[in-house]
Structure formats: structure tokens, C-alpha cells
Image 1 (tube, rainbow, N blue to C red):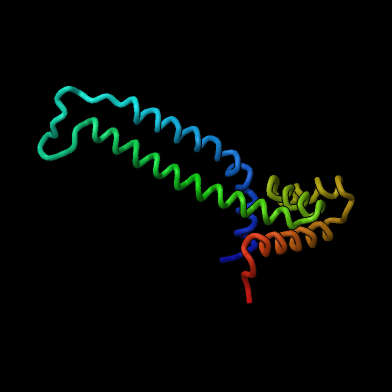
Image 2 (image 1 turned 90 degrees about the vertical axis):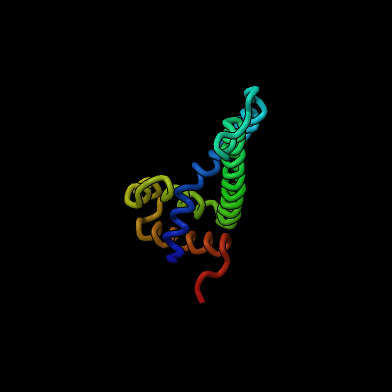
Length: 144
């Protein structure tokens, strides 16, 4: 695993992952409502040893709900870890890392050079330093 590429990927996906958490919760609530509103027919005997249509629909809801709950828990942990990593950066490092996550490196450097007044080489050095500090804060030591 390349820790730099992993850190970059995490930072690129952070905003979308954070925004998805409330949506996943709403999808879980919708499934729970669907489960309680499922209706059964008067003749609910299984055909040829299989489950009834009601049981199939209920089982589908249960499986989907459990998968969404697992996704929610995993994404919530990822978001918390990324936030802990970002919290360890100073204001300049965080601005640099966030700009690189939003834009291509060349465009990010242009924007940052105008905004904070550093030369391009210095911005790249600070970016590498910030990625390293972020990775240590999020994952711990990755290389020996």
C-alpha cells in the first residue's frame, strides 16, 4: 500500500462520504417504514417449498437494511478518522491539503500561490509535509 496515494484518496472522498451519512440514515428509515407497511395476502402458503411473496419482500428489506447499517458504521468511522487527521494540521497545511483534494495539483498550486503567497516549490513541500502529518495522525506509523 502506498500511504501517500491512500491519504490523497481519503481526502478526495471525505466531503462526499461525510455528506452521504444523513442520506444513508434516511434510506434506513425508509426501509424500516417499508417493512412495517408490507401486506400479506390471505393465502400465504409457500409454493413448492419456497418462501411466500411476503416473506421474500420482508427478507429483501432486512438484507438491504443490514447492508446499509454496515455501510453507515464503516463510513462514519472513516469520516471520524479523517477529521482526526485534519485536526492535527495547522491552518496553512489544512488549506493546502483541502485545495489539493478539490483540484488537480497544478491548479491547486496556482490557487494557493495566489491565496497564500508562497512559491510553487514551497507549496509542494508543505503539501508533502501535511500529507505525512495527516497520515500519522489518522493511521499511525506506516513505515519502519
